Image (tube, rainbow, N blue to C red):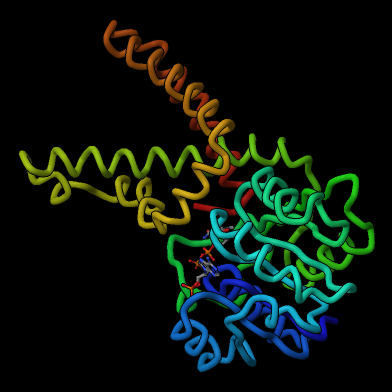
Length: 290
Ligand code: NAP
């Protein structure tokens, strides 16, 4: 049970977590903190938070659980601003999509990664953002990756694990660098491809009415290009080494496919499609997606 939960950034992820904890009776008081009063006021109207505070150090006073659900580029600034108000028993965590940059921010602000901070990443979300995008049950059946380091207190990891399990998530632990490599390939690379494809068609749009002829496949493939540009800017910058490796790998494979097409090498192309279809079908079966 959480007595006082402080959520920085009551948007899609922070708001959805607060909603689920409240609806399951797992928290007594939820306090929100972010930059824009209108967003916090709306979160209170919607019943997602009980109160809000715009001064980070005041917001964390007395909180036994602090969740940082702000864009990656804002993590260090929020950590620095809340630091003086932290209760010594508070457990802290975040939901950022890359983990090494969060650890670097902790080191720069606290001098070392505090034992009470448990880095976490829920593998759940949508292309929508802001408090209105917060939904019930977002984490049900989804995975949450914790990336504790040697200094992380076992008791703190246990509390963060229990919080996520209570909202229906399956919780795993991973090394932070491994997390960043895996997510660069499975999440950050696909976002780059979707954004770049839509942007390319946008420049062609001036000559031909491209989007008028786009069908369901285009819609499926590019849904994630409607995600928040600021958030994805921050992720690309935060995880640039791993993302560039994934992009280089993809570029090499795409280059080989282009050569096969240029050469009319149907066998290679068909083998590629067959391998990929087998993998996608298996993934869809196992993860229950369409
Ligand atoms: P979001 O819906 O845009 O919510 C972020 C909130 O952070 C906003 O409500 C904003 O409120 C607040 N904020 C922004 N900058 C701030 C700052 N400098 N100080 C204090 N508050 C600030 O974003 P989200 O999708 O929930 O993403 C939040 C985090 O979750 C990110 O780190 C992201 O990497 C991670 N994540 C996202 C997804 C996804 O699918 N979206 C999935 C997993 C993890 P104000 O405008 O009022 O400040």
